[in-house]
Length: 416
Image (cartoon, rainbow, N blue to C red; front, side, top):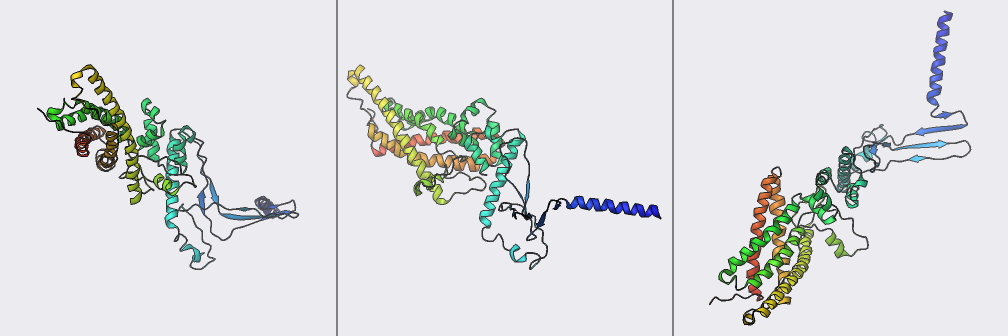
């Protein structure tokens, strides 16, 4: 009996010791007492901000919305921790039954009614940013190794993981790695990995198709108007690159515009580069913004067309003058090309005809039809793009000859 009593006594002492150690987290034997309370019996779990610059060391840290009050004997101090509320994140709610309709029923039913749209958009951005960060972590890359505009877009949640994968794939090529250093090429290559092929194809076949179109329109007068033909081809070579570059769909990496910018600048900053391009997930363009894309590109192409035509006509006139100096008999037969009228006329043609044709070609025919159908057959897709763009270039040459004759900057010579 005595042994059993001793055993029970030792068991009680061990329980008392364990209780004392368990309570040591709350009550400390230094004249300080700490009381912890939870109010209002709703605890939400969320993710704190990740350390985005540490590769392969992603830590998921949980923060809990709780309130702790520490009271000291001499100096009362109140410490409060509150987790930042992140809209549209998974929330785990514990109800303690202290309100109407099951817990805090007064507030739990309609909390997201007013700002549901904004909360959903913010949540989607954070999901895309988290996906992109995980993609980088899988290959041991950090944001510091990326261009600043791309890293900023990932941090703000504007870039999904699929774009990061495409960037990493393009980096494997030395040529693409060099081109990705330039912001304009980076935005276009991320949106279309065949962009560079389209540039080379457009400029390469431009010479042949435009020459063929000139011959188709002029026929017997082709050699009589050879100087004019040369001017058209020179203008085409200079302009072809910009015709592919400017209307090409892009992945926008531009930083937000300054707060003090004008309303017009803010409007055009939000416009897409192609009026018909597919918006990325979580983004959208209004009808006015798409119209703005046509206006903005039209303005740029007017400047490009005017400048390229100016160069082409100056070169042509130099050749004509050289021919006149050598062959005195042809001085009255060959006329110089009007520089100002031709330059402005070609600028207007590019701003209207070329702008609309290339916008439709890149944003509708290629991005919305050919690429979804043939995205797994790159060779066939490239061949289709080649055929469509060759036809568009030939059509543009025909339209230019008719337009130039219509406004009077070129005249058909009659065959004797």
